[in-house]
Length: 157
Image (cartoon, rainbow, N blue to C red; front, side, top):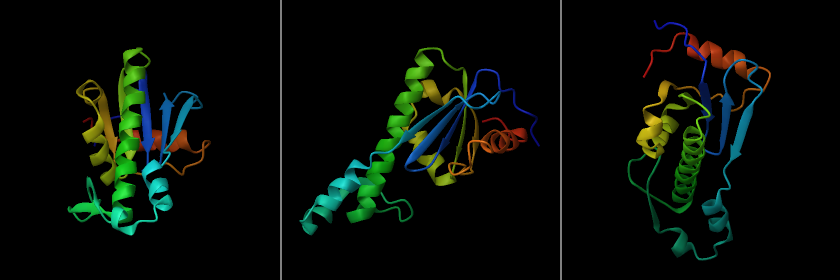
C-alpha cells in the first residue's frame, strides 16, 4: 500500500477518448480546464460518400485488435490519438510556464497507453501517479473526493 500523496504543485488529468479535465490541485478543486475533442476525422468520414476511401487504413493500430485500423475504427482511433497529442501540448505549455510541478493521470488503462505515447519526456518525468480509472463522468462536486480516494493509496510511478 502506498501513502497519501502530497498535492502541492500537483495537477491531475482525467481523460477519456473525447474529453479531458485538468484539475489544478485538490484544494478547492474548482479550478479546472476542460478540453473536448473536435473529432475532425470522424466528422470528415461522415461527410465522405466514397466508401472505398473510408475503407483505407489510417495508419493507426486498432484499439483492441492490434491490426491497422480501417473505416470507422480508423477514424475514431486517429481522432483519439490526435486528441491525446493536443492534451499533451496543453500540458506541456503549462509546464513550460511553471504552472505545475507534478502530474497525476486518471484514465482507462487503454487510454493510459495512448497517452504515454503522446507525452514528451519533459512531461513523463513529472508523472507521479497513473490510475487506471475513467472518472470523466464524475460530477464537479464529487470529483475532488473521487480523485483524493484514487490518489490515497496509489504507488508512485
